[in-house]
Image (cartoon, rainbow, N blue to C red; front, side, top):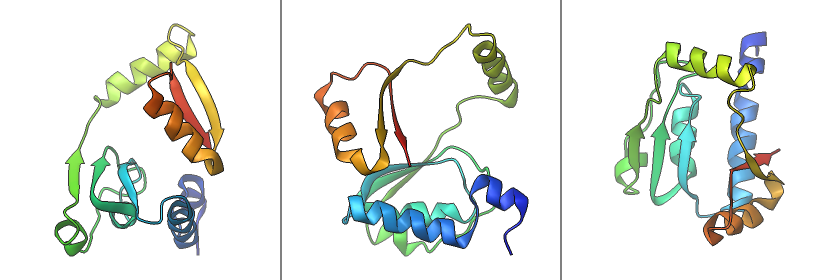
Length: 137
């Protein structure tokens, strides 16, 4: 049974399967890169969504610090795994205070529905994008 915490962070089997199906519809051969901030059971899912030679950037563990994965998902498909830490908890809290005080405002260059991912990718590749490109479900 999925509890409130799991529902809040999207950590349930149905959500993972739906994510994988949605991504495969858009990118049948897999994607070039995945930024995984969920960790836990999402780590292996992220590996499976990569194309051959793709890269998984692990930058958080919202659902769980511990993970396990099938190692051949990495070496059979020549995939890469990188860890990235953007700062300490104190840095994040200071950043949040700056955003809340409107001292820092991210610039949204474009907002796309997830189904319009190719158009967003085209904008990104064109070099004409200024600001964040956001995809919403």
